[in-house]
Every structure is written in C-alpha cells, then in structure tokens.
Image (cartoon, rainbow, N blue to C red; front, side, top):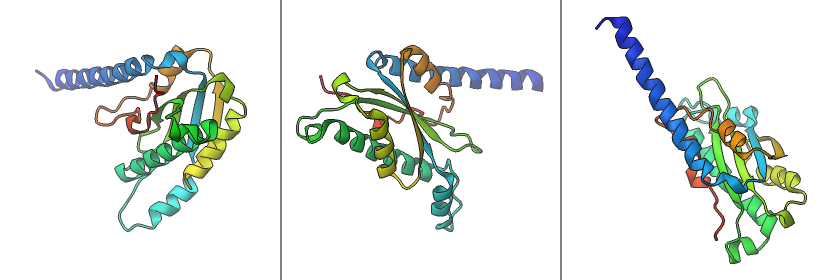
Length: 184
C-alpha cells in the first residue's frame, strides 16, 4: 500500500468517525426536539476569560479542558437561574423544568466557544423570555457575552444546525451534564 493510499484510508476513517459522532448527537437531540420553542445562543466575552487565564502560570487556552469545565459549570448555573426565573419556587419544590439541550460550538483551537441551546418554554411562561435569558446568563458567569434568543419554527433544521460542529470524537458537543428534561 503506498503512502497516499494509506493517508486517504486514514482520512476516510476519520471522516466516518466524525460523521458517526455527529449523527449520534443529532439522533439523540431529535428525540427531544419536537417540543422546542426557542433557539438560544450564549456567547463568552474574551476579555474576562483572558484575564482569568492570565492568573495561572500554566498555559490555559480558550478550549482547554479546564476552561471547558468552567463553561459547563456556568451553563449549569444558567439553567438553574433561567428555570427559577420562569417557574419561581415551583422549580425546586415541584421539580418544574424547561427542556434545555445545550451544545458547544467553536471548540477548535483558534475559536472562542459559544453555546447553542434548544429550549422548550410553556406558552404561559414565555413572556419576557429574551430578557430572562440575558439576565440568567449575566448572573451565571463573569465570562458572559451577548445572548441571541429566537422563536424556532423548524426544529429539525435547528437540531442540524447546532450539531454541525459535533466533529470531535474525543469530546461531547452536547453538554449532557447541563441538559434539563422536564419531568412528565
């Protein structure tokens, strides 16, 4: 087997693994997507992230595992704050919850990560949802950047869009430890 053929074979195998991971993520998401009402994007502000990273002697990058853990924790705080703002004390007392499926994007080395979220909000709780998202994100992390909140009318299109970067076979793009599923 010549070198080009081996390189082609390895590249093809890698592309197949990437496609399989992306398909697994999209398939899982589609199980929960039918009730999604809103498409939310949360961004991070680079300046406070860099200031945080500069506090350490070790070399952190925007996408290092330590920083991804910081982002995941911020996302969990965001979910709790948003849920509380929508349901008040019922969020904790009666386990009321929105559907929230967050997906990391921008995990490549030169990119700044951001988060796309598929959210389902009951009609009677959707007033001022955009403002509640912004307030919850600002309260969740000093790294908060801007938010973008939109009604979604094409849930399958949104699930495909937010999983388009699910290309890392060694990382989960769906932030499963921050997923919120309403209790039936």
